[in-house]
Image (cartoon, rainbow, N blue to C red; front, side):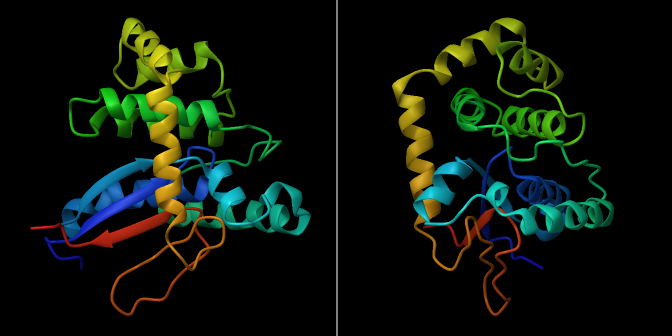
Length: 208
C-alpha cells in the first residue's frame, strides 16, 4: 500500500489505451492507497519521437499483440474498450492541447480534467468516435459537465502559445525519466520496472 506521503504523477495521452487503464485504476484506488494523484497531460507522439522509439502503428506484430492484450486487460481491470479499425491513425496533438487547456482552467482540483480526459478516451477506445473536431470536443465537454461557452473558450485557449508551451514542457518532463520504451512505468522501492504500459508514473515524497 502507498503511504499517505506519496505523490503520484500520471503522464498520459488519450491516444494511449494503456494509459487509460492506468488512469482508471489509479482513480479507483487512490483513496485506498492514500495517494495524491496528479494528472499530467502530455503528448505521446513527442515522447515516442524524443525517446528514439517507433510508433506501434509501424510494427505489425505489435499491433496484432496489442489487440489481444488490450482485450484481456480491459476485462481484467473492468474498463470496456474495443480496438479501433485504425488504432494509430489519429494525431493526438490538438486533443492533448485541449486537455492541457482544461487543466489550466480547472478550478476544481483536476475534477473537470479527469472527466474530460475520460470522455475523450471513451470516444476513441469505446465508441470509436472522432476526438479532433470542434463538435467532438463540445460533445465530450458537455458530457463532462462543461457548458458550450466554456468548451469554446477552452478551444480558443488550446490554440494559444502558452498552452502549446505547457504541453511541450510536460512532454519534455516525461522524457527525462529513464528506463522506458516510449512511455514507461516507474514504481518505487523494489518493485520491477514495466515498459508494458504506455504511461509514466513518477512517485515521490512532496517537498517540505
